[in-house]
Amino acid sequence: VKIYAITSTYKRPEQKAELTRLSHMIKHIPSFHWVVIEDSKGKTPLVSNFLKKSGLNVTHLCKKNGKRIGHGPKDLLTRNFALNWVRNHLARKEKGIVYFMDDDNTYDLRLFEEMRTTKIAAVWPVGLVGKVLYEGPVVCRGERVQKWRTGWKVEKRKFKVDMAGFCVHTDLLLQKPDVTFKDVATLEDDFLVDLGLTPKTIEGKHCDEVLVWHTRTEVTNISHEKYAIARYNATLIEV
Ligand code: UGA
Ligand code: MN
Image 1 (cartoon, rainbow, N blue to C red):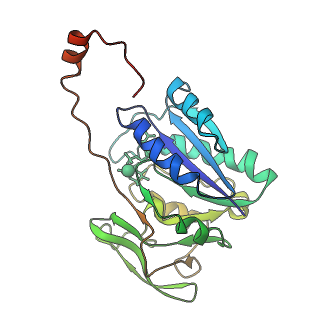
Image 2 (cartoon, rainbow, N blue to C red; image 1 turned 120 degrees about the horizontal axis):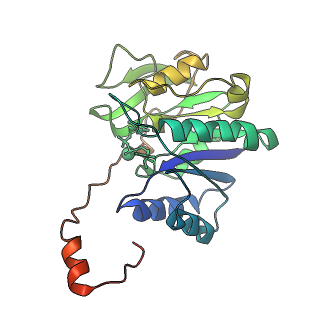
């Protein structure tokens, strides 16, 4: 079964480092299609060249996210655009598993072999998110989740799980062609509910081990960059 992983990405000093780390991890995953969608008006040369050189099986898309209000999920429009692209182009040719992969998270390769066996939709715990050490399903009996754990929106969410903590089969996405992410704080929960899933019917995987971490990269201090450009009159190399 193919895995279709959707990654929204945007221009900032750390972008190429994130994509490098992610792409080198992806090289180790068999039967994998990477859908990279740039949050920008057009495809940037950096990402275009990067993806070409990577030799990976990728689809490169772009879409600008709108203004964010309130919680305003950062990658809402890009993610929904890519999701529909997978529905209309990739899933028509070959069934698969869809996973939303932020460019700054940390992934254990075993996660992808676990998600590949998903029948309809699956959940698993995610480290370093939900205002706790790890959040998501933590006790499973067979495939059924018995207990969830989180420190965020404890009562408001049926599925107490981060974006990195679930995947869905393309069959379900094609059966529910209109379901996309909404502009709400509990967007993962709403998405899974809208797909007709319940915490009792969703498949729980490796509930006893964290295989993905919601790591975040520190914003780099480049406040002396103007000085460096003035002093060294540098032709900027790609960073
Ligand atoms: C959390 C969740 O893990 C995301 O899945 C969720 O979409 C996000 O919050 C949100 O609020 O929308 P967090 O670490 O706070 O993630 O967010 P980022 O890692 O900064 O962004 C998530 C993804 O969207 C990344 O792949 C990032 O490159 C991309 N992004 C971020 C954009 O495409 N455009 C932006 O303006 C910001
Ligand atoms: Mn992140």
